[in-house]
Length: 159
Image (cartoon, rainbow, N blue to C red; front, side):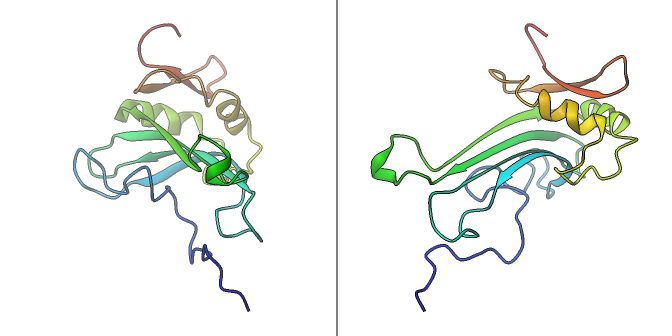
């Protein structure tokens, strides 16, 4: 039997080890997921070989201070490191204020399973379609549309 170079994780991590710290930068409490927006592929080491993709988008909150983050992670080891100029792992974060998380929960009130990226409720569909709306900023915000569904927006600048 050939040993695996990338052992399968015992539990699925909620954030990539290389990017987002588990602990909140403001107060040190451990973040917890609020909603799993999107996921594609399998975690590195869970597939039969390299040449796989795994990415996800989720919103996490700090129970200590109430602040949150919109977190996007991308792992792509389809090409070997010497075949590309991009790293295998990339991640992006956008800060969210406590009032954003309050609006997010209001918008997710009818969602049967906020922690499932497979959920097909209207709130998940909107969040999946608008998950890149906060690009080019370091802070995002959550607004409620006229339909009561949560939408991601830039905190400053053009909406």
